[in-house]
Image (cartoon, rainbow, N blue to C red; front, top):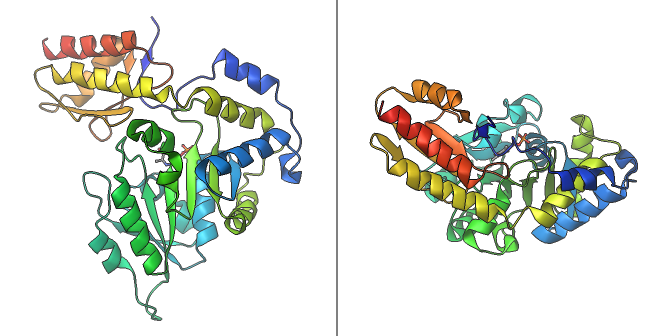
Length: 336
Ligand SMILES: *Cc1c(COP(=O)(O)O)cnc(C)c1O
């Protein structure tokens, strides 16, 4: 029985066409800036996002850390969401490796930080305090698309107060496809943007950090320091190129599958579902039955996670039949 793996959109396997593109990639030593495929990818993604330059890095975690360490000096402070990936799920890298002090702020249910919380957290220029340097936002957050008016207002506030701004756009293209907004409208107000090729875009490895030439030059040194300088990385950049060619528009299919899953689960007694904006469906089960439900699903060849409620993520390797099998397995468990 083939698995329906809804644990994450990182579980996708490169398609045959993507593997062919990787095998055919022209390569060089990227540490000497000699890899033509990496160079082409960096130019392409920078132009797409409306930034001067880009840097190809092995992971989203390293991309965010390169951004943080390029914007901030030791002892500087970054304003981050309490549940933001770069604060909560990156092993404390900004503090451990960057000596950057995170100032976490509570996130509203839609992923935003209140403007009043941001304003109140910016420290005065006084020897008692770290220098507040950077505001970090995440879009999509938990699969939700942040409102453009919010992104514009929060970044404008940061700029007025002399802060730089970073967007963790690991799933930026999900936000683009779901909202129908041009990508540059979303990225324009940010000084730097990180985007992952290895999530819904389906590449095996890789993220890009985009920003000004000056910022990316600093990030280039940080990447080397973090061990992220890769050699014939064109085989990986070719996968990302292929993803940009073929896997952006089709994110709409993942979103449709997520809605189909939410609709199906929503019809089952005892299951509460949050309507998805993009490809992530959160649900909860009445009583303390999450662990038992996950075990039942596993027996039926369906994988999901239960860390923050039930979470199902649709992607390239999940089709409508897999979605329907998932709904049937949940229904079977709930009516047992
Ligand atoms: C996955 C993810 C990252 C980190 O990417 P890795 O490649 O797993 O290091 C960063 N931010 C968000 C929002 C993510 O979902």
